[in-house]
Each structure stands twice: as structure tokens, then as C-alpha cells.
Length: 123
Image (cartoon, rainbow, N blue to C red; front, side):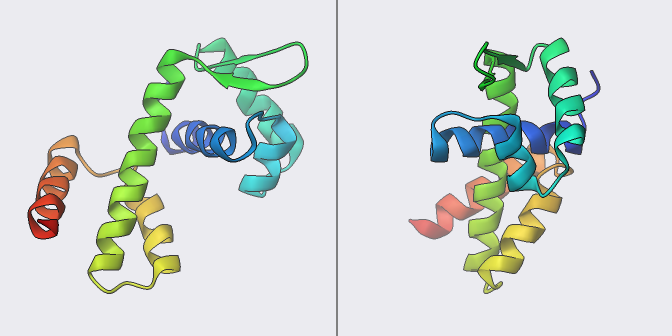
């Protein structure tokens, strides 16, 4: 499976919903992402077939180890970039939206440099 923005967004959403709700179902993802349930069902089938999630008999979606790794990486990028933009004076809502766009395209090298900068400024 090609790792793209859509896959990363689904995995990140599952992670966030898992923290918020405990158990995650397709309908929860559809509601959170404002997508139609059939679209989410197709995406969940692809994620399951590629080893990023499992779906229990009760319909609850769980991240596999590889799915959790991707989700946590994207979530860290999102929260770090969003916080950084807010520190720079960007409105929190706009910062969250922009971080969502940047998190998928920023290189590992640039992201690590941003983290180092934030840590040095925070001290």
C-alpha cells in the first residue's frame, strides 16, 4: 500500500478517536472526518488488507503495531507543528488546519529541525 495523505489521516483519526472514545467504529471515523460511511468502509478494508488495522467481531477497529507507528508519527507532527504555529502568533484554528496540511509533506530532516528549534526556544 502506498503511504499517502489519506492513509495517514485515517490512521491518525483512529488514534485520536481511540484516545477520546476508547472503542472506534467506522461510523465514528465517518462522523469525525465528515465522510460518508461507504467511503470509510472501503478505506478500512484497504487498511485491514495492508496490515494497518484489525476489526474485531463487534466491529471495533484497532491499530496494529505498524498502523500505530504511522498514526503516532503523524499525530506528533500535527501537534508539534500546530503548537509551533500558535507560538508564532497564528490563530489556533488556522494553526491546526495548516499543521494538517504540512504534516504530510515536511521531510523528517525539516521536522526534526523544527522540534530542535521549539525545544531550544522553550528552555
